[in-house]
Image 1 (cartoon, rainbow, N blue to C red):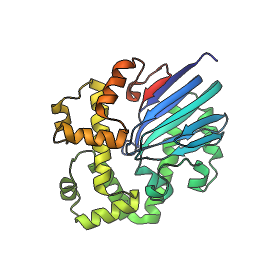
Image 2: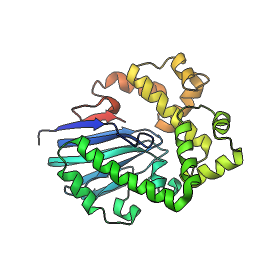
Image 3: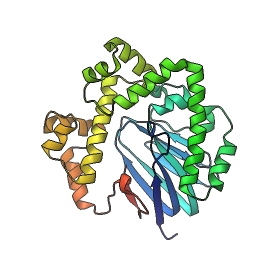
Image 4: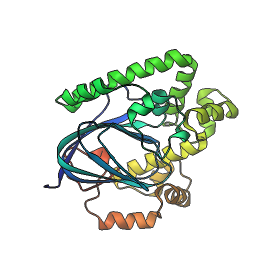
Length: 284
């Protein structure tokens, strides 16, 4: 084992409302990912090779497809790939899981599932097509076409009101910083908003908004190395104390401890900047 593992990503062509990026792992070695709380889930289309994942207090060894949902607690995923292989997956918005599964996120949060079990269908043909495709762009196109068919089925079974509410909730959360702004955009009452969002995600709008605000702030601050008060204010934080409380809540450590780790670890990478990144360590 030469401990070299490259990561390549590409943006979705159609499903930009729901998918953050597609990702492909190539090579062999040890892969460790530290993930703080965020409104995303990760899907790996993984069938023809061995994969070992340590997830919180769980140890999973499988050759099957995996889905790893949103969590509100920080955790580390460690994967050992002992031979040359290719893994293809996607980082999706957590609310998208409801469209795929029909299951509220509070029922699957913090667990790892086989896609076959959640989707209740045989996806062998899909995996075969993904494996056969030569480039990540081709793999992404195949996957998007499949997911589009799932969205179409959801819309037919749940009528347009449910689908539109889901889409509005997801999209609007990325352009507003408080619940009143969201209600104005949707033209709904607090009670209606709470009812819809609890049904779709299993958490309150306030909780999800807090998660998204924290994720957006961290993504920008890490990319531009800017943790000043102007940055925090632009992303909806009132002051440094407000941000620090969220950081401790979602990351599990104080912000000062995190900055010290960043200073001491020159290998720490930001996953959104990854093209042919050499691991062992990245931060998503």
